[in-house]
Length: 409
Ligand SMILES: O=C(O)C1=C[C@@H](OP(=O)(O)O)[C@@H](O)[C@H](O)C1
Ligand SMILES: C=C(OP(=O)(O)O)C(=O)O
Image (cartoon, rainbow, N blue to C red; front, top):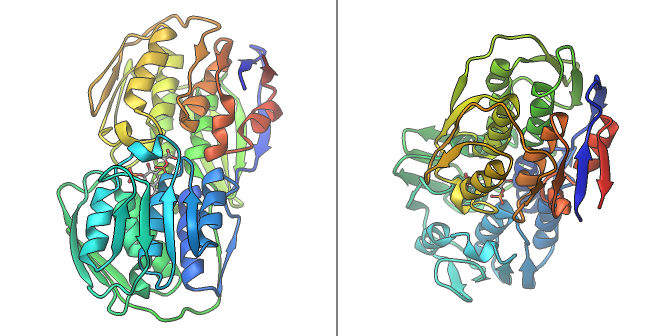
């Protein structure tokens, strides 16, 4: 599906949008619910990734296709490794078979798991033959993906002696590890995280509990960008957010202040408002703890004509696509002067945006959603726009509520 996006230049957006729960929190809670069935979940994500997670958890034998969902692939690997009597093959999209999983498989094998590579060593598909995991200590590299660590932590309370992890190297995407531990705490599981050591204590059952998932901050980033690119006075309200978020991407609140976006928290909502600010000519951002908002920020800066230097992006090459290459290619088409390495991105300040460019999305939901707010500045096309369903199936409908003109072409 190819979409043409444009907006009336004088629109003053004023609307409330309801985004569903964080896909990261949802997929963690779904796994914990499978281990401890008296957990109830409210405001669960309606993303494809959460849907495939639920389908995967419902299966005992056979093949589970998790499509593009990194969290589902990594979390289900840990889950099935410790499920005695279940045997599943976990597979996914072509891209998923290129996203590494060796660090997690090695760690699980060290704990006693039986996992076999079904195609290429180190990558999905994998056959997981569930068994009782006997060991309770393991060390693993922490600089490639925090999802390997979260996968181990999520099954940790169900292991007879809990789990002790030693994290080797610089720990990446730390807020996601803290999110996992915070959700364990919320259901009554004890843990500690000191330096590079994490300890989780065993738990055989938990008290009945309803956990309400906060809405998704990564999805909120596209509205921050939209407000940043719109006229002073523009307001958008997003429901089901809180000030003390478990999601690292809530750092948007501080980052977007530099672009004139003011955030107010009240009544479980966030109120975004564009205010007049004197902007610096260049923005510097270290995004090691919030990799999923890098694309949004790069496009906001380009739309505002600002230069930026984004660092800590070493994990972007192994996500849904090589996001650094994809940003380089698509922003260049729009007229940006941009350079990327394998861990950072530099954009020069610019004054012109080439109109009616067709943005390729590379099977990456965030490519489609990050570029969409540029329609505030110029009309553009988005190819394969259905990719957004990975995390935010209602994205295009929600943009239409904000008076975006969206036409299928
Ligand atoms: O644990 C999670 O829910 C996630 C962790 C991050 O991945 P990495 O740890 O691989 O950076 C993030 O990019 C991803 O969207 C979701
Ligand atoms: C990287 C992402 O997801 P995952 O790794 O779970 O596929 C994302 O949603 O940006």
